[in-house]
Image 1 (cartoon, rainbow, N blue to C red):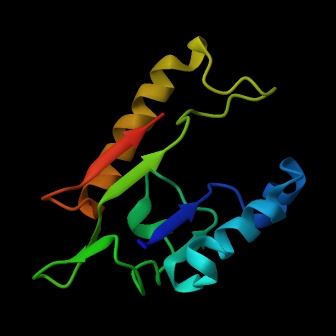
Image 2: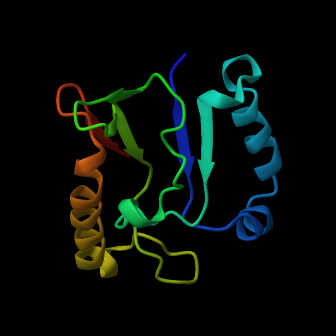
Length: 127
């Protein structure tokens, strides 16, 4: 089994308030790979445009899905970001009137993510 780093821009209190099934999702992550918690890390208040400063410091403490390189850094095979968009209020994330802001958000994410991507087999996925 590989290593999964699940992150959220929100803190745990907000996630519990907004997503009624949040605790069940956490439990699913905890039991990923037969309950071996060293294969899953969860990070809160992670800014995709500032990964270097907002990813948990212990992000590379375990895992097979990251490669250790000669410079002692570790890189992800995949970085996935579902529905990248700016929050514009009233539940209208990602609407056309925020198109330029969303484009800039994606550009900044790419700049932030590239140093964490494995140079030989790394991929970025956005959906």
